Length: 317
Image (cartoon, rainbow, N blue to C red):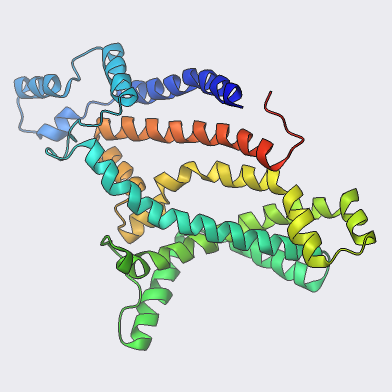
């Protein structure tokens, strides 16, 4: 297995290098210095600032320097727009906040969607199945932004007015487990509701396909209970597509939901990346993009390994 993992890592190194280069190459066409210095700055001051930021160096040299920092995990470079704050400090602040939002949302969405998919597949063609499919399609048809606006209005304003005190915050975040429900529960619920439609339809299709397999007919003929067939036989054999779905979502755990972080004022990685793009803060954009690329590559490799763990027919060769 380790030989397989090593080979996959070697194969994906050129992909990672290409992603980092593409990001830096695209950013090289933008000159952030005039906007940073203001319209009253002289040409000498602008050129001096370019030298200070290292933008006077060739792209190849800056690319090699950035790769060294990534390999050595040296994120000590200061932000261009916030001197005194390093990229590493920004990461340490943003990553836990994004995980506090996205980990509960992913867990709840996966568990609830798989259970609904099992129930819908078991009741295929009946009124319960039709109702669940209708609700899933309806949920998919509504914009994410609509959920956020109505969630803030109903879940915070109206509910808070009903009990004469604020239940959920609609902006900002204060670290601490005791503050999690006040700041994070509402965006987590919105994220779960938004994801339910897509995931429910996907898992239902997977479970419906499993119900047509011969091993299900054999289990029924042997007198196995419905719960055992659904949650043991069917769920175990459907783990491959479930793992695929979950692992593809894993890189989004660190980035968080950009819309949720933006509209709720949550200072996670998505919010930090958007601010860096708006402010032309190249170090943050380049390092964050490389981290996202590395996470995505690792999730693909981990997916193949989990295939072999859950399905003995799969061999890592």
